Length: 433
Image (cartoon, rainbow, N blue to C red):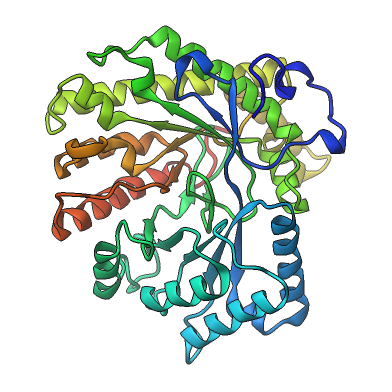
C-alpha cells in the first residue's frame, strides 16, 4: 500500500525509472472520505480478446497470444480472457477445450487470478465453466449478452438455458456473471464510442481489449451522515484529490504489454466507479419506486459527473491535452490545403470548448442501485436510469439476489441492459466539430 503523504503519484510527476513503476490497475479507494486518494490497493489487470478459431488456425498468432499471457502471469497480474470465434466450428465445445488445453500446455498455470468471459452463444454455460475451470482455474466467469442492436434476426438475449444457469448458479463457485452494453463512450463530444469486447478484472469493467484503466472507487454513503445527508464539500474534495492521484498514476504504472502502454498514453482512462445509490436511498428512508427518489439520485450522479469532467478540462489546460484528441484532428487527413485550414480553425474552436485530459472517467454498475443485505429488493430497479450517465459499466461483485425470484432477476438484467443501450449511442460518432 502507498502512504498518504509519500505516494509516488503525489511527490514526483517526472517520468519514473522503470524499477519505480507500479503494477497495473492500482485502485484509488475513496470508500472512507478521510483517506480519499490516500489508500491504494492492487486490484485488476488486463483484458484480452481471444478469437479462438483464428488463433487455433495460425500458430504464429497463437504463440504471440500465449506470450502475452506469460508476461502478465509472470508478474502475477490479474487478467481476463474473452473467448470469441467459436460459433463457426462444428463442435465449439471441443474447440474451446482444445484451445484451453493448448494454453495450459504452453505454460499457463491454473490460477484464480485468471477470469474468463464467453461472448459466444454456441457454447452452453455449463460446458464453458467446466472446461475453463479445469484448464485455467477458478477465477470469475462472465457471459457477454448479445448486443441489443446487433445483426437483424440475431439474438438480443441469452438463451433460455443460459438464463436458467445464471439464476440457479448465482452465488455458487460455478456462478457466471452477466455483462452487457457492448460499447464504451466518452462525455467529450469530440471522441467517438469504442467497442467493449473484453473485461478488465477488479471492477469487472466491460471495456475494449488491451485497454488501460486506473480505477477509482467512490462509495456515496461514506460521505453521508446517519440520515443520508451528503456532505457535498467532502465528496468534491475526495473526488478531485482522487482524480489528481489517478491522473499521475497513469505514467507510473508499468502495464507490461506494449499495446496497453500505448492505450494508457493515448487515452489516459480513469475509471471512477460511483457506488452506493441503493444504500444512500435506504439511509435517506426514501421509496425507490418514487419518481422524486430517482430525481434525487440523478442529481447526485450528474453533480459527480460534471465535477469530474470539469476537473479533467482544467487539467487539459494546466497540464496537457489528451493525445487521442490530437490524433482525432480531421485536418490531418487533408494535408496542406484550404480545406485543411478550414478544418483546423473549426477544430481549434471545438477544442477550446471541449478539451479534456481523459477519454473516459465515469463508471457505473447496475448493482450500485441495489442496497446491501436484506434491503436488496427488486423495486430498486426503478433507480437503474442513473447508470445511463456512465461512460463504461462494471459488473463485478453482484449481490446474492436473496429473496428474489427468477422473473425479477431476469427483469432486472434486461432492464439494466436496455437502460445502458438507450444511452450508449449518444457518442457513436464525434460531434460539435
